[in-house]
Length: 277
Image: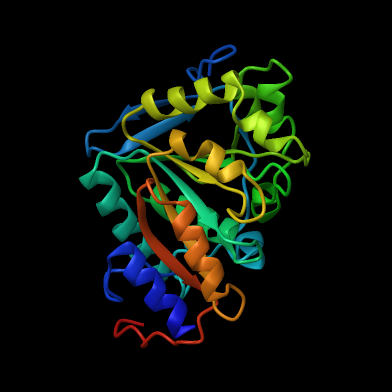
């Protein structure tokens, strides 16, 4: 796995210490949630038409969404990832990020979900997590929410976006899930309605970060077909699963798109115990 890490560092131009670790009508995104700034500078969100489906801590832990459990030992890992990602995004005025992987089963959806939760803890930010892995959608399973009508309900069903969003009971976080696998996925994510949606999601609220859970880069053309609509991406690899040549090929295909870092999932390396715990 050391070879993979070195390949990532070389391609990304980062050192090991720098690399991260583990609404309105058709075409409009207004009306789903109205952010208001408190006196403290934090955003107070009022969900008017967006469905709210609170998720209990026990379900979060069972589905390994540790970033949502304040005192969990692994929550600091995602705080560190959050800070590094946020710093790099803010430096370039990026507002949208894709979470990518090479061949699947690397934990990209888990990383995307935990990162979304952790970013939502930042009081001056709101977060939208979009399940764009249309052939194998799974964001809804991690949060334990009903995915319908979801993204396809907006794209194909003519529904208002606010009808398709879900707030999982975590303040400042909204999901745009999808529960119906489709095979013509690259055609769907490049249809004009989806491209218009991605533009409006980015531009409507400047304090919002949009996270796209992308399909594996080497298995379909979906991620590459949509990448030009995303400001930057984060690559997830898994120790003992992602091969060095797969990582190199993925990075080669992503050339020309801002790759701000990598996450080495399932690492056998243990983190030192935090002095305050």
